[in-house]
Image (cartoon, rainbow, N blue to C red):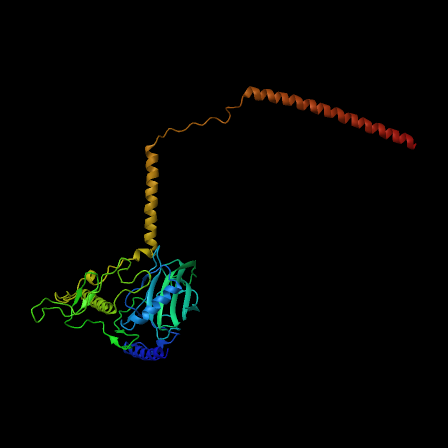
Length: 412
């Protein structure tokens, strides 16, 4: 632990000098205002739907070795891809302040991060979890989740494994749904890479290729850097770097298996990162020339292989994101859909038969003679009832008169 503390202090001083050299104030390293850049392992760990605690511990243990040989790169992490069926983009980063909040990743989080620690075979694993994240203006529900793992005991505490995945979704407050979490477009990153551990800790590695050292593509998609040309004895040209073995069937194109075991040799990985830097430099030169209305010289890209030769083909996942649609485009689409539906309705109506359908008269079941006979019968019955009622009334009146006479006679 004393060794890691000394290396950590040296690297922190080097990173502070780098941030000052890059024109960024050092106070951005404080936890209250984290920087925008991640110090990230130059290759993607891969897509992992789930990472168990044991897998995280194994990867962090392996990362202690190759972090001493491969320089980490300053880069942005912006809106990690969230696939429709497979989630789990993972990154390996280094931080001189592991307990500080992570830099901005283009996702707005609705809650604060929870941290807890677990024992792991004599080591201690710290897990940080934050839920309910969303990309402003793109996603309508907050369903993203981020976990970060680091070994506080038994490993390099500055190495952090960051894992993005999906969780239960919740509604987004209306006042935050379209408010971006950072300013766009993002600036171009040109800071040199830096070693985070080992004897060369704090040493910067420029991203421009060394002059006169071309980059040759290999059959397995890797690249090697070395002098190419005829040997002094007239023999064939050779490369100084050994060719790494082809990936096994269980390995992904990046050289990292789905069980989170690293299968890339550090030297080959460093050569591959240099090849990627050369390709990126060539791309920027072409973009700058196109923006200025100039043509790229024929020899500007000499010694640089085509993009497909130096790096694996990356799938475009932009279709998996919910793209915003303007109101006008949505209205035109609905009008065309409704117009097509109504055209089919009117076409069927115009080509069909127009013979009106006849309905039976509601009085067809009635007969006038029967109704007249019923009326006469009912009228005679009503007259008989009225006469009977009149007779009862007469009898009642007579009884009332007789009772009154009797009562008068008794009183007198």
